[in-house]
Length: 380
Length: 154
Image (cartoon, chains in turn green, red):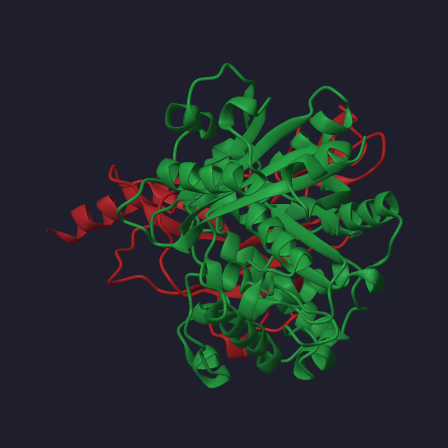
């Protein structure tokens, strides 16, 4: 059974003091229901995630108590992608006809403070100051720049593009363009990454209505089909966040594995993608994820980014809604924001951030601690 | 205070050095070393010591000392003071940025640790570093907590 996305809803990302995380989730859920022309009582199941805004299944208190199975998902930054895959499989199995995927969050300001114990790491690791996702991203791009000749200017150009795209997206948080000079010269956080090269924890909510593909036209004239949905965790030897040590022999990370599996599942390749949303926790992540997802060879990013290939009008538009850099990262909602954006793109409803030439295939990728990745391939 | 009392107090402090975690490195020892487990089935080493092998799921491991010298695989400098669970003697006013990196220990693993150097100009991938054991913080009871660091070879 194929699966279609027939309704989408979003609560603007950023900071909304007047609404709790749960209320932002409910806001997005109601918009998604309305978009699909379906009532909450018709929804047969839900998967949802929230890291800091309470249990996702508390949404039923806002939307109504209908007795459906509502399963909470928690997979770090890959929570949204994991929820979506769970829902995809629930429909694909034939068990359900229509369901909801939702994610929302509301984080405090500043870097996430993770607890080593939750990941089976000794407390000493946090005490000495290594329980920091920002350090991992900095060390990964530091090594990558050394091995593949990526420049500091190219790092900054990724942020520059993100804020340009954010300025075109009414739901984004950062909506003012920032110059390359200002990005490079902003406060150093973890060398080589400065303040404006990182995304920040934020708030927001997204909901999607999924149904079996042969029912899709009941809900919408513009269904978008999930042609591939995969999720992988790390194998031994991949370089991952929160690793007190790593193997001498390095292997491909979960992004490479999940990406290959998704392309195989969808029967298409990287060159077929018209628009892609790639995890950009910071600028290095976007650069490395371009290669890890198969869109270029290692090192080609330098020329591609300098030439503007990843801009909305470029040959391989990346993070057309501004990505995590311009939207911030509400963990539960972030991966679903990518899917929301791709559905807009494939429907031709993305407004000022619409990619040209009638896109038909779109790609999303999330990466999260402690080494997981989820991919979707959407087709109009 | 008389010099003897001062010396006595210093002795007490010196004699109360405790490792930041048990089993992370040999301590006390004449020549302390990081401790790894090595899988008897596949031969892969892990740090810190684990009771099973992440490479092959084997559960028969032996503990060994890792080499004390290696090469820097990658690095960064932590420029802001982390929130909890960070636990040092510092305040936001006294915080000093610190280097973090992975040291590739031949025949062992790449271990993540703090660097004694925090100047980005003096750090580069591939440089040779030694594993050293130095005081990290003083506990309220006067115990000196020892951690491992990577120090550039002079």
